[in-house]
Length: 491
Image (cartoon, rainbow, N blue to C red):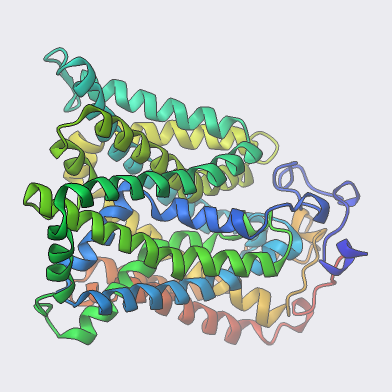
């Protein structure tokens, strides 16, 4: 009875096309949806604890000229905006138990869903590689601290210690991913509190060494210099936009996580604790740590690796390196592994499982991380990845318009795994042309926010505007097709 209320059906009863179905893409039944609010909180805590997130959080206090309380207000506001968007995209995952690329078939078509899914996968692979490279910096520093500088040998601008560090980081991530979603869940639940515990201990050590100077430095940073062009409101909105842009890719594919959650209430509580509240707490720790480093070493450093380099203490170096290492694995699991694993599995379900898809993503990411210094950073590939990320905005708008407005939260879960011509989601050779039309104008606008300097201030809000435009356009051109509006509610 519960399964019926949730819109799911027994997996064994689904008559599926092998081109669209495997066990990893199949709906998760209610009795197997075991994640609670703490698992969702852990997802977001891990997302916010990376080296990159630390740098961004520190930059928010130093580069926008605002007083600290206004920065905190902007962070909390952005957290609530992200939370609302996440709750909207996560709800169908709980009800039907399917990952994002399968959910996208309803609006994009059973084959058309591969378009946004693969774009999301490419974005994830590039940032997976970037995060792996950043984590390898810290591990390489530890290796040099323990064993000396090593041989004077370089390949692709990386020395022997860095190559060893890159292999260690990559292999550890693959070992975790290969064990599957249950192992990932356990890791996330353990990693988030552990990283926070170590951050608090390191902050305490800095506070003891700096004394009252930490609070004075914090007060200096909190005052700000009000130097941002356009004034306080422009700076406030820029921070909100920056935060939204950072979370935008996960907003799209949140079904990949919510499909494991036992109830919408658990998801909402976890998102509340893990987004606005956790974002504010993490930013506070970064602010105090940054102040402590400035009080002890005389520099306001936002790069955690540089902070480790300043600490002339092997024990602290080991602890800090392991902490950043764990944090990087956490964010790669959340933002950069599960998405491409599902996306690649959706591309060829009969040949690519979730585990094999994750392995392919990890191998591609290793190439990205190995080429990061010598090739990728020289050609501005991050801007290319941001372009693909901007293109994902219309995909979110189409998903929301199709599920909530056109179909009134009802899907034919059988048809979503079938590719015969009379299937509800087959459209034209597996592609929904109306969805493609709704993609065009918003995509142009979203991409311009990346490449046109005059629109760069809209980078985060460009995503929201692009999603809204796609939602409206898709609704306008689809509302007359009544035959597709009310798909049967399974079972």
